[in-house]
Image 1: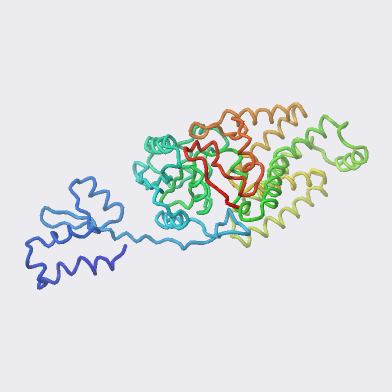
Image 2 (image 1 turned 180 degrees about the horizontal axis):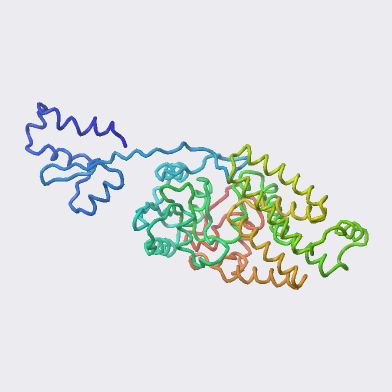
Length: 438
């Protein structure tokens, strides 16, 4: 609470009766009507909501005012811990909505940037801010997002990641249909590309819509580096996707049903490594993957310095002990470790967690039916992704629908001179965003 404002602006009107301004008026509060910081209130519901929001209530005779003295404690702007970059801005959102809005305004200094304030939560009445750039964002998307938020009937929502689960097109899917981020520069780029953005007071995360599956593999680093380096890094992330999803399941499939796929020089090493393992490959893989997930979760919940030590030492000690005890093979340890490392390459934590979960499904299918089960699992994932939408647009854009022009900013990071149009998924009437003169 900002007590200085009360003491400086309001209390003198009551205690200094010799003030000539007060003598001219029978009701001292009539003087407040000329000051914008004092908000006259006529409805009791509005009065109660203002008090619950932290505003000071001023009542004199039959007049009532609300004075904005809200000064919530908040942390300073710091670097994002989940979306770190090597080159580029290091600012991240905080839990204070006004601070987050100022970070966006600093990057998008346009009078066309519109901010709409909504409330969600029957009990908490959390403030939600919908942002878009007029004449760039598609009005249908803006209307759709606003209506979805207004239709949410829930007692409490404390974070943006809770809100998007209530407005998803497919809430039962393991994949998030809204891109979430803690970086103001990412949100600014989404606004310029024609997306609709939402912030929530009390949450350091914002989301943009519509979103495609391939956006989750893009990072701000890609645009702050040379286009060739950004393209190579982007292709590396797609390779990491295949490794983290398939490698362990492929090991189970090959060692269980398809020994003919193993090279002759490797089959002797693999046979010797598995000779002391009493479990079938599927149980061996599930055991080690579960152990890796336990170490990952323990490292995330412990203090930073201790968590890093637990992750490194625990992985080495448990892995080596498991091999010596005959519970697993050396090659599986390599496969599981490679899958775990590849999952960290995916820049979006939500998408990375989704693929870690699907990895267990593929391991089970590969252990039951070999390569056929692996193929069935991969086909189901592709079919499921093809059926997803983000506020009515295709989740696999620009593959379906086929938009080859957008590929240069999805599977590649082409030079800026080749990125002159906004994404087709945004369906913006103003498609041009770049005009190079040289």
